Image 1 (cartoon, rainbow, N blue to C red):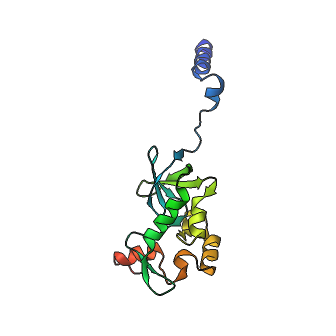
Image 2 (tube, rainbow, N blue to C red):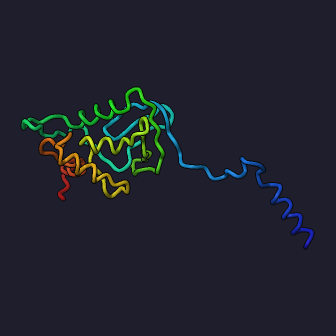
Image 3 (cartoon, rainbow, N blue to C red):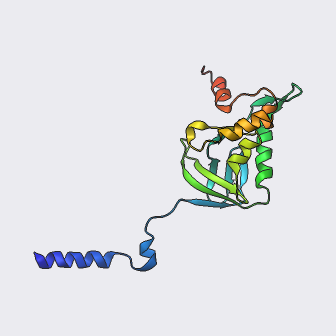
Amino acid sequence: MRAFSSALAVAAVLALPAGPAGAQQSRGPEIVQGRPEVVAGDILRFARGGRVRLVGIEAPLPGQTCVSGFGRPYDCHRAALEFLRNAVRDKDVTCRILGLNVERDKIGLCAADGRNLSVGMVRAGWAYAWRTLGHDYSRYEARAQTSQSGVWIGPNEAPWRWRSRQIGIRE
């Protein structure tokens, strides 16, 4: 029995990977990099890596309008989309993937030239802080409100409330 146990122990040791490669058995977080296409004010699509939703924020949705400082409605979805396009134009973007959402999109902490895109969108007033998702950008949202930046220049509605109204859910 002892010989069998010793042989089993030797076999187990020989089966272990040797050298530095064996020492790095656990993979780090998934990283997606490149020059993405902007799909929405909070979604990027990479040629290699697929769709990535910016963590902790939600931008105005397609069809959603806001009101300008002059009292005129405008397409705030398009404005958010254009702001993000300008933020990533001709820049390498890196996203550290944190998980998946219910639609199976990757959720990522993304930066262009070292600048956090979620912070940039909220600070400029083109996205809302999504406080329930962890990365809390509410202080940037408060600054955007105070300075009347982006959607905060006039009356607006958070995307989750607008979406609920569109499908007939009362809050």
